[in-house]
Image (cartoon, rainbow, N blue to C red; front, side, top):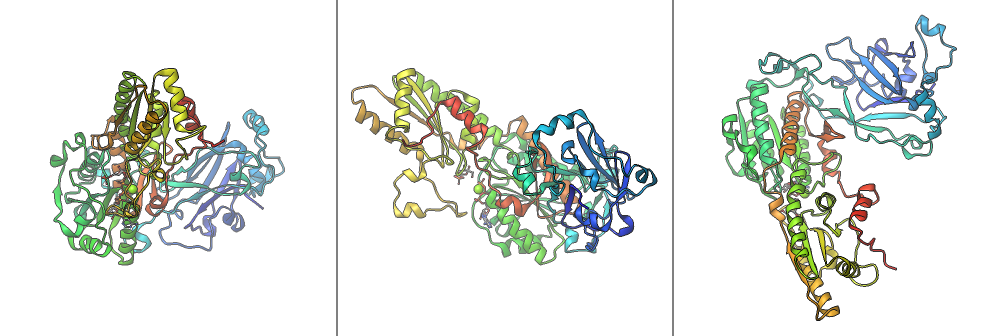
Length: 583
Ligand SMILES: Nc1ncnc2c1ncn2[C@@H]1O[C@H](COP(=O)(O)OP(=O)(O)OP(=O)(O)O)[C@@H](O)[C@H]1O
Ligand SMILES: O=P(O)(O)OC[C@H]1O[C@](O)(CO)[C@@H](O)[C@@H]1O
Ligand SMILES: [Mg+2]
């Protein structure tokens, strides 16, 4: 017997007596051992404090017009597992069920297939007929303090008694609520998702939990910012302070200054809502930041020494790799300290999350540079406006700024190969643009074309304090190459290149309204997660919803521009730039 609808949980527990019953088209069935395993609910696995073992007593699958909603409800205080799926995935789901109730038995022989018109119409999508092709969900396991401190006792959430909050019904997030990592699926039989049976990855939904694992009076929280600047860092700090203070009544909140090195080399500063009141209006980080200085033992020793039991780490990919090490060391030492990361990257190079806070602000600021370049180029004879935008190894800022501006004729990013001379090259394209329009605007990401620039041996090895390769200025190099080209091919014609490098101006500003809101919600999400005892996680936006993601996963997930998708095709159509394919 096979269930086409599977649920995988890395830690799951279900006693036979607790086997969930499932209702499909008014028919109920109870999962047997066999199909429990099919659901990934392995009855042999008994995990203390498994997030699932509370939730299985009842389950129902209701078929709504074109979607199936699976709901399990609990006899315990918290409610359960909820997710929805497109109906056609379940075309033959019910054939797999074992009816057990009287009603179910009566209807046992009735063919159970979706009869909605929507489902029938979708037959053209060649949904696989083979019932052994399951569509399954894999929940990413979120580390919890009780994983290694099983005796910790949960407490009711203090928000219950917070007169400012009055939690209404539905306020608390069930541990079983998930956010799907991927919301676009190809349901055709030969699509990878269906044919390879690969499960859909899901993350725990962020938000306040009914139970917490910290007594507010015992909390000593630390906040640190690391890596480069990004609009909104101060807002995140502010909201962590205000959120901890106002929501959970925490009174010991500290800022660790100057990045990771600050843990062991500086005294933490005490923070309170009054002090941070205006910080969201300021660019940069009031706690100061730095690169390098990551000394694991010194950092964890200092955390222990100061008595911090909640550590909030704001930073980019490098910072998150450091946070993984800190979390692992804290686990190894079996310390009752929760670690939460808040991903920050102006480059938007962190994977899994939709985008980092501050990214939209940076793109908005980049418009000003592009506008200026356009005006300069248009006002010159054979004028070229050249703008270099941040993006160490990804071209997201350049791409988004190009798409929003519409004044850009060519966008060069690290993810594409391009060349200057010859047929199909940049110079040929610019020559045509200048002839037709009299001017051109070029946007380059800082990491683009690094292989083209001649480097000395020393330059090849140069790294910053964190170990990141130091890039040469591609914009400045390209400007001189453009001038050489023009002087060589058009000796007596006027030509102007205006190079604008707004580098730090796009990231050293306060966050705009959208980013400020994002900062607030991502900070509050982190607080709720830590209060609930989760650790080694980051809070972030996934498909428009706030979720908790294991920090280990975030630290290694890169977000590069996909030059095969529609967005990049759109860039090419907006700019009309060449594909840089050598004839
Ligand atoms: N692999 C790693 N393990 C431990 N710590 C690391 C690692 N990589 C970087 N770090 C530390 O994380 C901090 C920030 O790293 P980095 O300078 O690379 O910035 P980032 O967090 O990636 O942010 P951004 O790139 O957006 O500026 C530094 O203190 C650095 O020493
Ligand atoms: O000069 P800094 O502060 O080391 O940072 C420069 C780098 O930081 C970023 O802004 C973020 O990683 C990159 O775009 C840029 O290469
Ligand atoms: Mg980085």
